[in-house]
Length: 271
Image 1 (cartoon, rainbow, N blue to C red):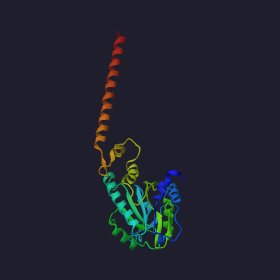
Image 2 (image 1 turned 60 degrees about the horizontal axis):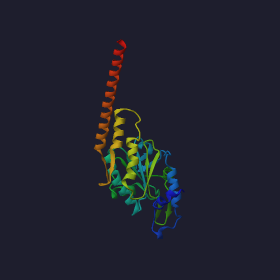
Image 3 (image 1 turned 180 degrees about the vertical axis):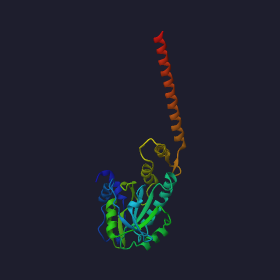
Image 4 (image 1 turned 90 degrees about the vertical axis):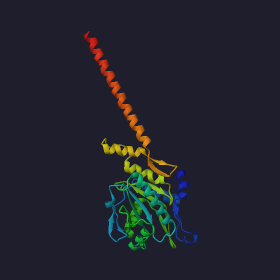
């Protein structure tokens, strides 16, 4: 593990109280390496179970970015905190990026205990139920293990619960791991910036009006440290518009001068 990761690794794990840690401990540096190695990998079309008992395959959620949060319902401390942090960040991201610009899935990774009924109770207790773009799911042991391997999620069983990575995973519209967000109370910018890149794009793919508009929104959506929120900086819009007008005027002047010079040369040639 490279040295720059050591400080982050120390913050990576959600730990149980010392008396509850009867299983093997997770090595933070190794867990971080596994998590980072998942970036760029394709997440499979895993078949999961919604809190209402219906099935959900991850391919149904393709077409826009997806935020993946793994919890277990018997966790009474850190998982609710991380979910509330995520809920607040999602609300801010939707204001800046659009209410339907991405989806979220909260996954109960304790296959034995995270039943649809308990997932429903978790969603209700954390006030994330009833959101059409926020899916609360569990699954079979095989499906959950495959999903956790795809997103680089490490955990270890312990008496009374689990020790596990504090990780929120952001997938792109094609289902590839794009970014990992660490900590149960992560800064808004760490969550927003990768979503902003995915929603608006980091480059202009085409010169259509829609693509250019998305590029402008990407440039002009900025974090305001005074309010702790993202906002549209209209001064940037004005600056870009003024710059574009100046370039057009300059081009017009150059063309006029070039045409005038051509006419003068033709008159001289005739005389």
